[in-house]
Length: 273
Image (tube, rainbow, N blue to C red):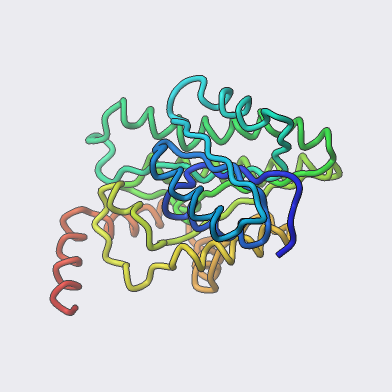
């Protein structure tokens, strides 16, 4: 473990991928600023990491990034007392499964704010400090869904396409500044995301554990990879996707993701289990 002097800020750090990333960065000696909406869960993670890694400083800042002004407040609180955020990990996000017409305007707006506006604002707020120090890294957590138009996850997939595109373009702009940006594009990960998004998950046996994803993500991130796609199968599917137009993928994904079909598949899987 190599102790670092600056801080790694991770949003959505109280559970799932964010929590696994926090544990992985802590294992490598990074001081942490953990951000999440639930103060109780966040403080529990802070205590666990502090006990497991007494040599690092772990700060918890509760924040609801779906609310106006929270990104600016987070920046002020995170940089208080002279703390230097050297690594920004934008992990917080939300999804919602179902037909587009059944997703209310309020729900769609909240998703756009958290998945698009919040990471954009946080990068814009923290980036000048990084460029000024000629040192820093940004990791935006996207999804394989960002590469494919996805019926019944249409808004979510579109937000992740934005995150992926923004990160790749930003990394090109940052060449020569000492700052780099990477985007993590996982497939199905064994977290509570499917449950909270209302997805009937038939792929649990094929889900990647969040801890394994965090190890792969950290290694690729610190090695300076721009796009991190974890797993040979996912990388192969991404290459194959370029052989067919987006409309073809949308039809295939839409046929598989129809709620009625997913229910039949989950019943079949349950009987086999």
